[in-house]
Image (cartoon, rainbow, N blue to C red):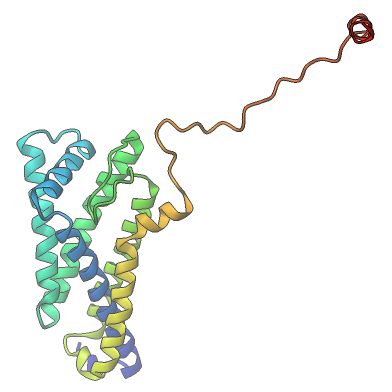
Length: 225
C-alpha cells in the first residue's frame, strides 16, 4: 500500500523519524569509520578486538577488525544514497552490526574485561554498562527508522516539505553527536578510579588513651621541679 491511503499527518511524522534516524546513525557510523583511520588507530582497534573476542587471535582479529571497518563505511555509503532503498539497507545493516557489537560487549562485560571498546570513537574507557546503554539507544533509533520507513511507504517523503526534513535531520544529527561522545559524557558524572588510587577514606588518627592517675602525678612532679 502506498502513502496515499494513510493520513498525511502520520506520513509526515514517519518521515521525520526516518530523516532523524538516518542522520543520527550516519553521524555515529561516520565517526566510527574515521576513528579507525591511520596505522596507530587501526592497531589500537585490532588490539581491542583481540581483547574483546578471546577466540580471535592473529589473523582472526585482523579479519574481524577489517569486517567491522567495512561495515562502518558500507552503512555510511548506503545512508548517503538518494532514495528509500539505500536508507532501508543502511539502517538494516546498521541494526545488524549494532546487534553483533552489543553481544560482544555484553560478553566482555560479563567476563570483566578491562579493555576499551574503540567501536565508536577512540575512548579508552573500559567496557561497561555505559557502552551497552549507548548501543541500546542506537538500536532503538535504528529500529524506529526502519519501522517508520515501512509505514510511510516509498513516496512518503514527497508529502513532507524539504525544510521540515532538514530540521528533523538536524535534530537526528545532534542526537548522533551526543551518542558518539556518550562515554565522555558518562565520565563527567562517573569519574573512573585512577590506577593506584586508594578508595579508602582519610587516615584514621590514633587517639592517645587518657593518662592514668600515676602518670598524671609523675608529670606534675616533673613540672614542679
